[in-house]
Length: 156
Image (cartoon, rainbow, N blue to C red):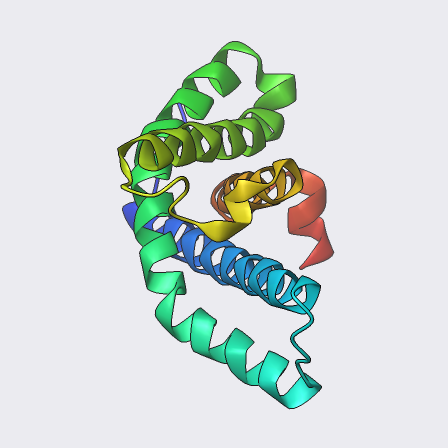
């Protein structure tokens, strides 16, 4: 049986959620700026960068909450599937994070008073990219929590 370090699990979780929340925030920002540009609003590079940093500071914490709740459910499911199919373990974590976030977004959008709470989710591409951030979180978590022998040799 594997020995799990609670510190390693918590650190992997925090890094995965943080990285995915920041990535999702940048994606959300770019979709919002693209929508404004489509309305013939001219946005210079300084404004784009300032907006991106603003959203990372203000949207990432909200996204981190969505991701945390999702991953607390999805990662144990992925772990169980990974035990049953060990050759595919990392893929289960990636799929679990992505599918979990797809489900979470669908629930959130159903409960939100507006058509979609997160603007990037209004298009199929945006929905896939934002949900993919859950897959990114699953990959990062698994990579940090349970690196392969090859990955461990890379850092030796």
